[in-house]
Image (cartoon, helix red, strand yellow):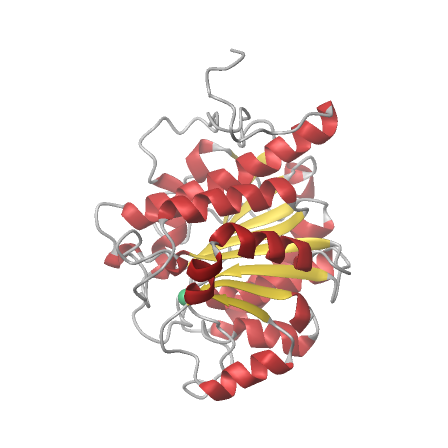
Length: 338
Ligand SMILES: [Mn+2]
């Protein structure tokens, strides 16, 4: 089988990184990270369009698509210092949620079992169910992967529209299956008027730790994230990072299916994911719910692209510091020592 490429639009890779073929293990044998497109929006409860998220996040940056991005802040090149490939999209027909999720889970398990980190471009949040399941299987970490989940919504819903497979339920499926412990499932950025009290009661019974925006603003983001980082790793081997772009305020991330006012700023999200990628052993990542038909001037697609770059740069700096015995100092002036 030849490489599937992109389900929609031209066959391009994330900012021009090398391509690989999931059917040819040698093509990604030396990978640190494999980027995967999951162009599925059949799980949306409201307005669709996230199937075009992978395409938009891959192509949005105006700089040359040369597979290279030097981070000024971190002094590393997330696309070059790590060995990053883009395998293209998984075939995910939005009219068949179960088959689409099966296809994705197999790919994620394969990537993880090869020793690489899958970085998934969504798609709606349904994809986190097969993503984390595939990681927990492929890395042999069933029940020992901590999840840090950025979102306006808890996504722990019960049956909706007659189905348990949808973008409002993946976190419930992951806890119910035992792939992730409820008490190592951490959520950041919840707000608004969903879920209702019975679902919050279910979440409490699982021991989940959910930081709603009011707590985050009252205590300060840094204090909450310090706490989340400490909790996530207790009795867990690695962390899966799931970023729903709607964790950011719709003013800065309008291109999404279910916006909720009052979220994080772009700055806060980028700083936080960079810090997490630097401080935590990451075993999988997804960036979901970028919905280009609702975007304006590529604001949201560009934010998704930058979340990916900050995660990769943070991981690259983590590897570099481990190798060189150095420590990243965020307060260092960028021209210092050059
Ligand atoms: Mn959401």
